[in-house]
Image 1 (cartoon, each protein chain N blue to C red):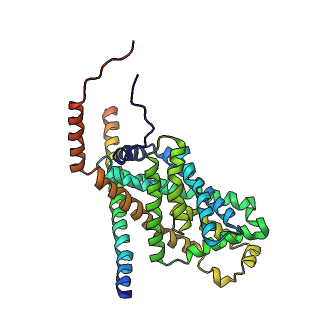
Image 2: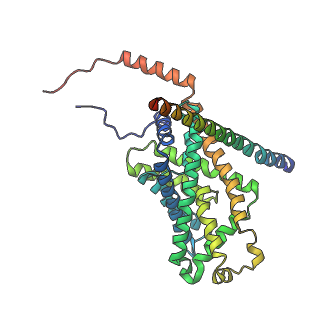
Image 3: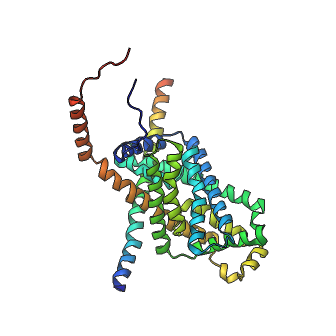
Length: 302
Length: 51
């Protein structure tokens, strides 16, 4: 009987190897499958964002607890992406590891990012349309709509530097969550790995480009609902920035930050630690030496 | 202290987009070139099969 069965988490060195392999598989996938999986991821994150909006509305909790509960429920999005399987742009920034490891060309990396980003946008916008028609924003005397409008308006009023910094920190945490899931062996391992980094980024108010593809368009639709605007106590001038231009400006800054946070601060750093040529050669030497010194396997039992 | 923070803010606001947008620009250029090379190779194979 084999003695290879173990419940231990994968160590970081194995996680780095797995990430390079997964990155190669993701980037060389058929483009239509990639696009369909990206549409799914966009709608999964949209569902997480919708759940977040609903739960933090009129919760009666203190500031910190409200943020904590909102962060916990937002995890739904990434749990669906990781466990059900989907292509999320921010998580795919980790494919940088496969590129710097020489498994992929820069063109292949870019093809994945472009298709996945477009798919995420389509999935998020479709979720916005469905959620709008559910009239869920009328719940609790339009308070759910007010929350959605406030979230969107706050996002489009961020300066470039604020949106960029929040984008960097957000995707560092999202990519760390995805990185941690590589250590897990079961579904519950993966869910637990996601929980804390994602809750931290949402509670801290960091900016996620794909989540914003849900939050801001939802605000744009609700801006045209007089009941929601009146309940929120806004006048037209307060919502001047909440426009398509405001949406694209936010996405440019946040996406730039997300790529830097995930691709450079997580993927590149872990590649440097575990997968750069010098370290890889030393690992291979150690592996060969330990195989040579290992005792011969003996047959036991009948 | 506040002037140091202003310089850092300016540095991050310029350097991070410069690094990321350069990567994206080079990546899109490479993707474009690889697509042209692939379609050229496909045309050559199709031509050889026909002849």
